[in-house]
Each structure stands twice: as structure tokens, then as C-alpha cells.
Image (spheres, rainbow, N blue to C red):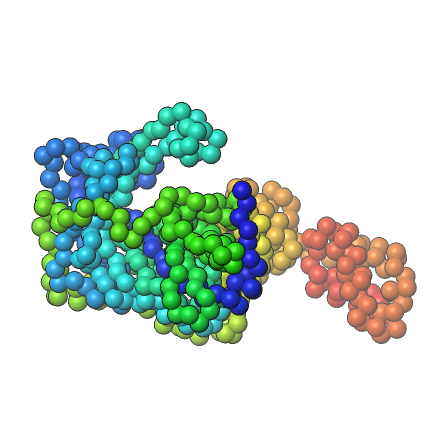
Length: 497
Ligand SMILES: [Zn+2]
């Protein structure tokens, strides 16, 4: 049954949204959280396992120091306090993808707490407060065979791969994000985007949302406008792209408002997000006090990072993202609006890498925010996954700068790059895209255009130089866009002088 939805403008006129984001970051350590198994992605199922991560009797876990280091660096970058002493706990539940029947996690003693991240939303700074960032381990992966949807319902049987079980995760939990109003979907997206940028800058994760190395759970509740009371929340699980984070918030706001407007009440539950149509559907009911029978993990010693070590790690932090944005804007000479659009499109690091590969900031911005953004949008993918790298964009721009191709032909080079036809130079050669600036060929085409457009030619002879555009257009058409437009214009004016 399709959900009833309320128009978004009406929702924000009647209700205040409260957001909460829980982001899981899979660390890129060489080994798992509590054993020496490798963490390489894509291995044959169940080849990266040992008695510890399979939870066999008698196996003893040991904390991965690199994972603790990464957790502290993430916490410091998020302006958190770092615990002087903390422990792991057992979160007990039975699920086939968790071989130990408990997850080793942190419960009431997280390693990082009380921080914040300032995010840019359409040129405004919005402070997202961080409640905690704690260490835990990932579960294995279930695959359900035989059903139409890939879900367990309707499946003939299920397979489980424990290669992922025990990979270190950091879970970053925000405090309720209030006061975002109509910008709530954008705030959610900007927070995850800027958190991802920070994780990339720290170098602690592959940070690939499409591969699940960053996963976001989106909590949302609505309360009557101005009431100040938090409503019942839903938790949309495992949203795996920035665009989906925004859409999930928007959809849940409209759906919740429809339920409340009809006098209903929101069920506290987890929900699934559906990429295809941007909707969510009911998962399982969830209470605040689910009985996981947490207790301190008896097989692990407490983690007590020395203050000297924490300060040493503080010294390894990358540039603060807000300061970095200001520096890049200055270096690139972007207007506030250009910078805001670049950040909003998730193109900041792409432009940065394109500039590093030799393109001018304005040309890098132009390609990422126009042609490539349109392609990403049409394909429903993130800009970074559009199929063209920053180095290739810089390569295309080099050909434009050298007047080998023009902007219009460059778009065909991007077609070729996405189709995997080779380097920009190879594509120009193979597709015969180079601009013709040889006077012989151009002159003949200009003569033909003058001959077939005598009235336009007369206007130009009478001094109406602006009319030259029509003749340039005719020549470009004749030469399938592959003429040097500047030279064509000169030839037209010389011939009709
Ligand atoms: Zn293992």
C-alpha cells in the first residue's frame, strides 16, 4: 500500500523536524578489530576468518591499536573529548551473520564524546553536535537466495560470509539536530558529505558509500511547530549515498506528517530505504530499551590512551575543513556563490584534485558543476562515481586550452571516457574530434555559408557585425562542430569587409 504524503512546504509550515544521524565508518586497518585476519574487500567468502572472529570457544580477542588510533583521530577531528579510560562491552543478540552471538562494542563508555562538526548549508554554517563516537566490530554478510527482492522474505535459503565479521567500525552518533526546519534534508546530506570529506582527509577509511564503508542511519521525528517536544522517531537504516540521505529525510518528513495529520501516531521502528523510488518501508519495531544484556567484555583489558599519545595524534590532524574551504576559495578566486555551489554539489575535493592535475579552478568548476553534474544526476549516481576522474577532466581541459577541441567536442570526449575508450587524446584521435583550424578547409566552408545565406552576408557587408553569428553557426554545422569558431569569425569578416 502506498503511503500518503504531505507536500513538503506544508510539512515545514506545521511541524519542526528533529534529525539524528548515526554513521558507521569501516576503518581501513590491515587487520580486524580483535584478531589478525585480513580485511581486504571482495575475497572469496569465509576465507578471511579465524577462531576469534568466528567466536569459537577459547579464542581470545586482542584490541587492534591502529583502530584505537583511528578512533581517537576521528574524535579529535570532531572536537570530541577523548576518554582517559574506557571499556568494551558485549551486546548480546542472536543473528546468523554474527557468529559470536554478541557484538563487541562500546556501550556506556565510548572512547570519544561531546564534540561537534560545523557544516556548510547553502552558505550558512550549521553546528551539528556529536554525542559520541565509539568503536565496535562489523557483522558478517547474509545473502538470501531465491526470492524476487533479495530480502529474506520469499528466499529459498540464505548464505553467510564472515569475512566482514570483526572488521573495525567507528559509529558516530549526533545529538538531536533541531532547528533545521525546511533545510533538514540538506543539513543531513551536508553533514554526511562533510563527515565523509573529513574521514577521507584523515585517511582512516576508503569512505566508499557505494561499497558500504560509510553507512548512515537516519533518525527522524516531527513535533508540532513550536511545541519543543520531541516526537516519536523512525530510523531509516543503511542509506548508502548522499543523495539518498537527503531523499530519505524528505520522504520521512512527508510520510510522518501525513500520519500525524490523519490523527495517527508514528510507530517507533526501523525502516528500509528504496533507491528506485526514494521511499521507505517498514522494517521492525524498535524500542528504546531493547534488552541487549550489555555487560563489560571480560576478555579485553580497558583502553586507556595516555594524554601524551592523544596530543601526539592531535598533531597529525588534517587542516580543519572550514579553514580549508576558506583557503581554497581564496586561492581559487571563487565568489561566495561559486564556492557554495561547489560544496553543495559535493565537488570540492574533485575540483581540488582537478586543479592539482593542472586545470584552472574555473575550468575545473565548470566541468564538474555543469556537464558532469548533469550526467551524474541522469545516472542517479554521486558525482565522484560518474566515470570520469579529476586527472581526465584536467586532460580534457588541456586539449581545450590547446585549441585541439572546443567545449562542445569536449562533451563527446567525456562520452568516450565514460565508455572506457581510453585517454582524452586517444578518444580525440579515434573519434576524429580535433578542431579544424586549417584555413583551406575553413575558407571553403565559409564561402559556402556566404553563398547560401546572401541576405545575412549583405547585413554584415552593411556593418552589422552581430549577424556574423548566423554564418558561424552555419559553418559549425557544416563542419560538425569541429571548426575553430574564432578563426571562422575572422575569415567571415575578412571576406565580407
Ligand atoms: Zn579473525
